[in-house]
Image (cartoon, rainbow, N blue to C red):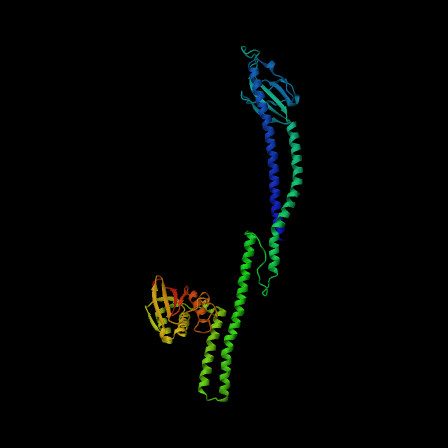
Length: 428
């Protein structure tokens, strides 16, 4: 079942409930108004008639169309009965007081009141108290109700189909942008990731299309990065492979050439590291495969600094992390500084900063170009010192996997990398 059909059925059901409820309430309201008007008229007439009987002015009462006057004795005997069809049963005359009240019988309504029968205001009634009843046919009300029900029924059979048609047209118009968006999205594939060309208001549909366009843009960007990654990886692997093949060819002509053998080994080692870095980034190992231990960060930093022959200064701080990954991160940062400024121009420092361990790698190389800084930690983003452009991306991935972050500040003659890692709770 389509969304448009579900929407039409839902609103049609709501329209049906609203229409039935409105027509029912209208009928009940008119009936209450008619009955209330009849009751008010009868009560007022009964009050005046009782007052006239009490004062002995019965001759002033005039018969009006549709209203009948009756007199009953207290035992229920009819003394004056002007309309036989409006005779009241004795049980209906019980508990009638001086205040008029209205009762409803089959086909008529009656206003009852107890009153004395006096011939003159100064003379007492010889018959004692009587029960005065004013009655009126309810046939006009019933006819009006019947006509009203007929009119409401006709209105229902007219308004319900009309309203349902309007609901369907509204649902069709409402769902049209969604259908167009669905058609446009269905045309997209891995080779076509351009945005959905729909200009919609900032409603739910508009925000949905914007979200889809954002997703398509992210997929397109990821695909372009993947292509760039493959191109860069191919380039990076092609160069050392060419060099390695050249050295192997040289060794083939002169197997005892130690220089060619050493160069071949160095090239193979570079290729091994490059392939490992590529696999780490491609599989996300730098972020996922952690083996956490309580790590003495000072010991790791001293080890990395000693490997590259750079200066180190710091205090003993402990973090929870993977020592191999953290050592890899430190090596990448220090190697980046050594390429830019040499061993003598690099300093490594470790200190506490609030609840974090702050590791700084500073070099006095030429600095990082300003246009490179925003994408420095992306894959294959190379600085002036060369390299594959993977070390810093891996270092940032490792830092984030440990709940930390690497930031950088650079200007000509000074580049400072700062790594913040959360300390153990007892350390913090």
